[in-house]
Image 1 (tube, rainbow, N blue to C red):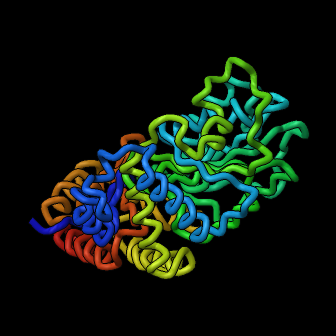
Image 2: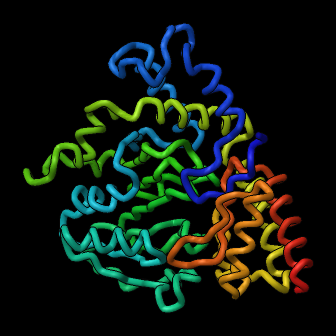
Length: 361
C-alpha cells in the first residue's frame, strides 16, 4: 500500500526521508550493533547522540548560550503545572485564553497561585486572537502565558503580546520549528514533539538559565523541577531515548532543507494555496478570522454535519486521512505541518473541488 496524505493534528506526518533513515538504522545504529531503542542512555554512543541533537537544535533555532534546552517527558500538558510551580515567585501570572489548551493551562495555574485571565476569545469559540497591545497585566505578575498556535481552533499569534516588560511563556507545540523564532523574546518556550518535531513522548523546553531556580518549595516534586533536568543534561532518569533520536533526525532534515526560513516560505505557500481555495468555495467555509489564521492547522466546515461526515469518509477512501475536526469543534481540520508536501495540499484541494461539484454547490 502506498503512503497516504496524513492530515492528523498529532501525532502527525513525519518526513519520509527521516522514516527511511530510522528504518535503515533500526537494527544497527552507526556500527554499534544495536538499535537506539535498546541501548543504554548512559553509554558513549547515546551520550553523543543526545548532545548532537541539542547542538543541531541550537543551531537551527539560534538558541543563545544563556538558555538551557531540555528534552522532557509528560507531554506539553505536564508543563501546564511545571511552569507555575517553577516560575511563580510572586504567586501571580497572566494568561491569555485563546483555546482549549490555554484554558487548561490557566486552570492548572490557578492551583499554584493567582492565575489571571487578561484576555480571551471564548466569546466567539476561539475564532480569533484578542487584541494584546494594551493588556491589563498585574504589575507583580511573574509571567504572561500564551498558546502561540491553537491546534484545535486554527489560530496563531502573528504578533506577540505586549507583555509590558513581563516574562513571556509560550506553548509552541503546534508551530515549533515551522518558522524562525527569536528566542530572546521569551523566558520559556515548550513544545510537545508530535506535531512538527518527532513522535509523541518528548517535550522540548527552552528556558532562560536565570529562571532555573534552586529555591523552590520542598513540596515541588524532584521530577517537576527544571533544575533537576538542566543539571543532569536531560538524563536525570531514563529519557525517551528513541524519540529524541527521531527528533534529532528531523533537526538534520530541517538543516539540510534550508532551515526555518526556508520552511516558513514553504508553509506560507501551502497555507496560502489552501486558504485561497477555501475563500473561493461555495460549499466549504473557514471558521477563523482571516487575519489570525494558522499556517499549521486549518479548520473548515460545510455547515451540514452529515455532509461533513460524508466528506471525511470519502476523503479517507481517497488516501486523505485524519481530516475529522476536533470533537469540540466538529467539521474538518487539515493540519499541514512541515512534513506535509505541497502535493498533499494540492490533492486535498482537488478532492474538495470534486466533492463540491458532485454535490452541486
